[in-house]
Length: 482
Ligand code: NAD
Image (cartoon, rainbow, N blue to C red):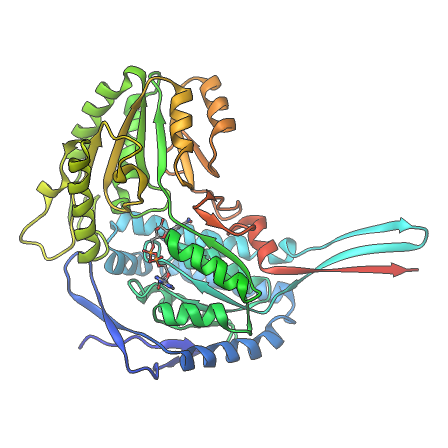
């Protein structure tokens, strides 16, 4: 069978984009073209939004337990198709099958949370606000929601958005990353199979034209965005300018502080996974290690040894831990950062360029480690989003916290220590929203908010948890005289 062009999913049907434009979607591990993704136009989008608007009329009035029951069936179908979904994630994104399998789990957890809609959507009442006067707060859906997602979690990030938005009674238009568009279609197909009425979830593939279309469309009432910092800032400002509520989750540069009393074996194990797992293409990846006091030498020795043992290759192969980065251009950009780091005067302790496998067509970069990194270097300041780890040396925990807080990003931060006092100080003084203690990737589960701060997040209400419910509902206050 030849390589096909993906279709949009609109009104429960597969629809060919009218744009006539498409771009290839290569498998990052091999360079083979998996499919072509249509670069849809405004006409395609307008059609999807008007169908979603029409579907809202009945879906928003469908009894909440009925909506929830469809989510329960969807959860079952996702579980039944877990392996196929994980394989698709690896094929289009490149991460190892084990990571992809875990990602599918995180996505399913979002559906499980959303299935609690009857409880999550409850309002509040106070029967006696004055003599014979009662007040109550009721939650209602908001309308058509637009979702825009990145390439690095083709399953989990869309699942932060549409299951909860839909469970709350909204209808949805998703624009998946054009670099990883395949899985989204399968997710929509399975939702239809679970009984979701046509038009409630729609998928329009494409690039920034579709993003701008969603931001400007007067029938789209809210925007959920996840992606890089400049685009997140742009999306936040533009959507707000068009009168929409918006949550925009952005880039990161997560610091991990390693204290002299840390359990080094545990720390290495966690940091190897957090820095090099998913090829460093995680918004919760550890990209800077702050080594405190004398810990740097023994830490570095063990870290390099562990990095040398990492198996690099196609994520579908047994035992592979480190897959490719997403595109050839991203590989080139990463190699450039390695050059810059060396030029800036950091010590290149492990050079991932030497791991580049010549006979492979994929976009591979090996684990790369810089020591003696300083805050005036680009490799400290920028989100590289690749398996490149910087080590900064400081003398005290106070200095480590001060340095971490200088970053413009503040998605997450971690500390490795056995001392409760260190943990308390770290917890209280770090300016970041998601903290890990002796843990590498402190990504909260679906029932808690995904809480980036500073330039890692634009908006007020985070994705997931009770924030997600607040975001996807609006409140009505009813005051009654009896
Ligand atoms: P990206 O910003 O390039 O793309 C994200 C989405 O925005 C895509 O759907 C893309 O089509 C669209 N887009 C890209 N450029 C645009 C433009 N100029 N105008 C309008 N729309 C545009 O991000 P990416 O490379 O796909 O994803 C990686 C980034 O996402 C990293 O920065 C990572 O930290 C971030 N991320 C953050 C979180 C979080 O929770 N904070 C989670 C996952 C990923």
